[in-house]
Image 1 (cartoon, rainbow, N blue to C red):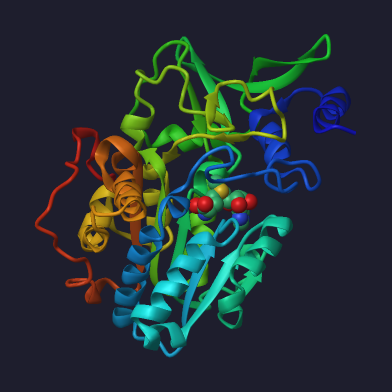
Image 2 (cartoon, rainbow, N blue to C red):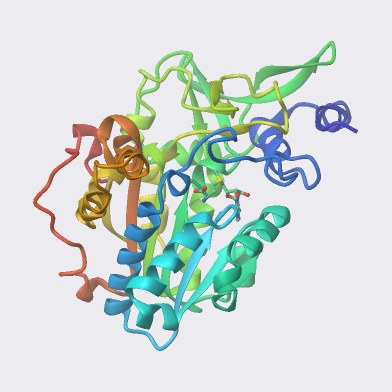
Length: 384
Ligand SMILES: C[S@@+](CC[C@H](N)C(=O)[O-])C[C@H]1O[C@@H](n2cnc3c(N)ncnc32)[C@H](O)[C@@H]1O
């Protein structure tokens, strides 16, 4: 049965489903979901690019962050947990860089990949064969014990792929967007919120929504950061994704929210086309990650743009390794610039660094770079 038909039968049997339920099936149905079926294709030949497929310089910079984290955590057991690692491209660049540039940290590091889709996990095992003795593959965070990790949790473009609810405000009242059928075709209808958690999510935000404004609410993102906080005994959490703080994300300029679908490098706003063959995603609410983290002992160290983060950790030194003399080298320079220039990936992606049980050691942790590539915008004042 095609995935569309599986979703149709569910709606016929149970009535309208939330957008989050629709997205869960479209991306993660065990057999036909975009990610679970192995159809997710990231990179030049695929549907979209992520930073690790732009250039290994991205992984090299994260490996520098990991080395500094290792120095301040000073553990007997040091673990890097990468969640939503896809095929392991970032893990490979990080481990190659650690092995070549910091062999003593490489020797002490255990690398855990958490990837919920087993067919992607299997590809990761092939990509990482050179480092396989260092890497453990698991499909869920729930297999890690509380307070069992001293080290660093990293993720790149994980949170934007969690299924989200969509709501719409009409005359000040919140309605949820559900998916139903009209003559066999998928159709959106409004109804009462499926869970009180949706109203609760916005309670602490002082935001006035415009009439007819739609937003996405990612309830799982907060639960995820709280699970990370529980598992981490001492260390840092590095979350990289596109998104904003809440006042900017939920600004009425974005009347239709931020959700988009990606198919063959083309963005569209129709989640009911190419079901199971296209990605569905929305910008991340970093205010939620900051607050949910804080409620379980994760303190914010920095929230900044990817461009500034890469500059601070020395990406310009890597650019200088590539001369302008030959074409492959020139192409590498251009690819690396894509990662940090504000008009390309530099401003769109944000980096959130949180810590647990390290406060007193952080004074000299973050490098101070004289170069400013992005400036905080007024809406970017950190939440309490
Ligand atoms: C957009 S891809 C990013 C892949 C990779 N990090 C990159 O930057 O290229 C998101 C990945 O997160 C995985 N994922 C989503 N939810 C997850 C969860 N709850 N636990 C582990 N992996 C998850 C998906 O299967 C997918 O491989």
